[in-house]
Image (cartoon, rainbow, N blue to C red; front, side, top):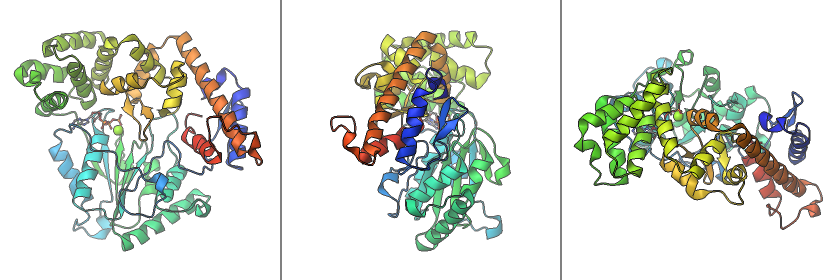
Length: 461
Ligand SMILES: Nc1ncnc2c1ncn2[C@@H]1O[C@H](COP(=O)(O)OP(=O)(O)OP(=O)(O)O)[C@@H](O)[C@H]1O
Ligand SMILES: [Mg+2]
């Protein structure tokens, strides 16, 4: 947003900040550094994008916070030992003296190595075993985004998901932490243990306040960093083994077409493909998507292309080189409008982008849904946690932003800015005390929709 606003420092930020302030008086939306509005620490009526909390079971949460644990990762392969280790750490029946109970387990490793996939898969396995009758809370801490989620916000989101009504939400972080612990203590007695899955933590400070006092609960963290300060069971995740990587490729192709035997038919070349992908699941999935999209292509052809890209990128270290080579290959193959969409998505403000902002980015009346799905099939874009929202892996974001020409980027930013301004004005019209000013023909049908828009787009704004 700061970059966006550089184009028009006073007008839009001021309009949006004033509108936010009116919608939630005293919300903390304020001028910040003179050139952009700061909404951190604001009070919002619904949960904000960036803190997705779900309760898997249990009925106490507000309905808007219930969205379900992310689905099991498709084609999940291998990781038997790691899954078993994690399940041991999470086992609520673990016969340990309470004093030494392992409450927190932390999976660490490179971006794209499969931390979230492993954590989500394991949470599903735990749920199947009936382990956490108190529910599963999933929270994305966005630790590696520009603005990691603060303890204050994550506690607020978790409390909200646990059923604390807005009017009873404590104002200070310490009070929130205390209420969080006591709410979980009650839940442990009444229903049983809760699993908190905290995805993308970048520091121990982000996690510490989320650790419950009761030893029936567990916290499962994913992080690109090892977080020894947490006193957690540490599970560093390495790249896949040769066999697992080979199996991932074969399985991914067979998911697209059960008769596709290209990987199995040429094991030597497929192993070479796996090594060029650094045995990194993200790169392997992209390579598999390239093959699946082109059924006539022999594996050896992809290997030759990838090897060439690899050579060019020898200034990068191994993990980065493998993913970057895979991105480049995918990118070069995209039709021009999809390539443009990827470049523009990389410039989107906020960690996730809505269909309407995608439409503004590309300068169309509607989002280019077919192109969005094509990029998702190529594993370059992921669907967001809410329907109609999209996200980019941050390595893809860096890659895409590097591909965008300056003029193209400036024009897209200006369009998004205009879009936000128009929407913010229309939403604001519904929030004035006597809102007859609001046009019924505008984008919002009433105050609730206008507020929901502010909440949903908060991160982007
Ligand atoms: N064991 C696996 N089998 C099959 N696919 C996998 C496996 N592990 C990860 N993947 C896939 O690889 C991609 C990257 O995995 P994931 O998102 O879990 O990485 P991550 O380590 O959480 O990365 P980040 O640090 O960026 O969050 C995803 O598309 C995921 O579904
Ligand atoms: Mg992840």
